[in-house]
Amino acid sequence: MEIFFQLFWLFFILSVLSPYLQQQLLYGARARKIAELERKRRSRVITLIHRQEAVSFLGIPITRFINIDDSEQVLRAIRLTDKSVPIDLVLHTPGGLVLAAEQIAEALLRHPAKVTVFVPHYAMSGGTLIALAADEIVMDENAVLGPVDPQLGQYPAASILKVLEKKPLAEVEDQTLILADVAEKALRQVKATVKGLLLRHLPEERAEAVAALLSQGTWTHDYPIDVTQAREMGLPVSTEMPLEVYELMDLYPQAQGGKPSVQYVPLPYRGEPAGGRR
Image (tube, one colour):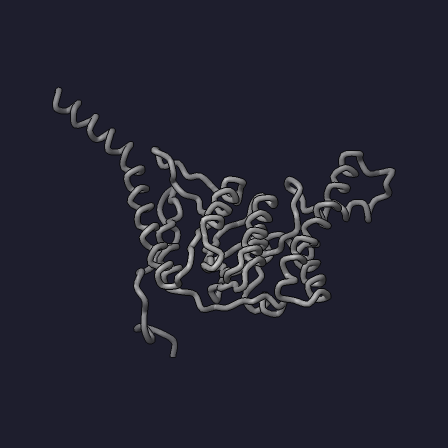
């Protein structure tokens, strides 16, 4: 019986420590892959990757967004980078806090050497704002950016202003009027920020038009801007994605709460497999 209890406690301890140990091994693998990419490109590589990861002892998934902690860390990495050293930012995010995204974007904009942002899958909202600060945006052929129109709580700022257009002021609640005032300021501020970033690549008139397109509620906030559309806007987009970026993304697995919903043989297929189209 005593042996049984010893085995039970040993199993319990290993079960508790296993997620932590796996996470530490993953951190080491990420650091090695980042160093490999830095040697290849002779640059400082920074990652800003937000997935739902199991980060605690018990493996509880935590969803992450751009926040002040992110901006502090990215700004520190930029400060530690010599002005002559290029910066490569691997970006994978649904967005987040506007203040944090603006801080990162402005810091990248001020870096004298070339700044490249890699978007292997998506960089929405605040992620797009950061990407606009780059000298070059390298996107996977199927990757997307998104609008940067500000959101006030659960409502788009542009939609709040629509209320004032459709209802007499006497019928609008005071709280809505206050929100509309804040929304107007937010839209103006974000547009000015976006225009300032775009002036690096576009003439003023074009920068003004694209800034309005991206920031004034033209689309829903989750509207996908693909490579073709980004190029039509005049953004400096390339699709020459280094293999190491994909390999790095593989080291940021999505937390699985149950059986995986997508399965495939994780090997490259060359030519046409058996049973292909005729």
